[in-house]
Length: 238
Image 1 (cartoon, rainbow, N blue to C red):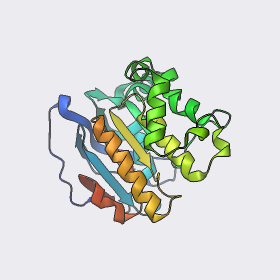
Image 2 (image 1 turned 90 degrees about the vertical axis):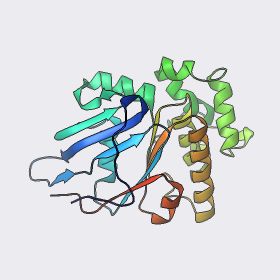
Image 3 (image 1 turned 45 degrees about the vertical axis):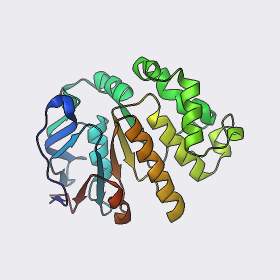
């Protein structure tokens, strides 16, 4: 059963709503428990902290929100579109145009430089490319500077950089082109407490400058104070 804390979903007009979910469930296969999730409703520009123990379904929920998975039942509505009703290709296009994802394992392209990794979404989405100011390389440089990546690292392959630097590059990649929503899966897990808090402050400051909503997954309850809303998943399996 999933429970919510310090968060009461309120209906809003689609124009002002980043995402809304209703009755979401998911099952990984025959004989596996069904995961059920609380209804979410997040207005544009607001931030949600999602926490829970290992196995509570945090990463699965993010995959449902991003359209990488489709629910067994229920609906995911984002920016007025019903993701669960779209084809696989349409979900991929929607994600490329509107969603920035910070993966737990970063998912950076190892043979690309830091700068090329950051600008990658602009090669996959004309909408993200056209939203950069004045063009992708300049916005990438601003993001890398804001996230404290030294200039002499910008043209190095990401495999030559530290774990903390790779984490910040993944954040810059998610933010470029001002997506409507950032989904972040345990993005501070490899950082010490000082760098963790600094990273989170920078991420939310940059998101707020773009009116981007953030759904941030972590098991670390100390981070919850930075967010507008909180949801706790407690034994989501049934």
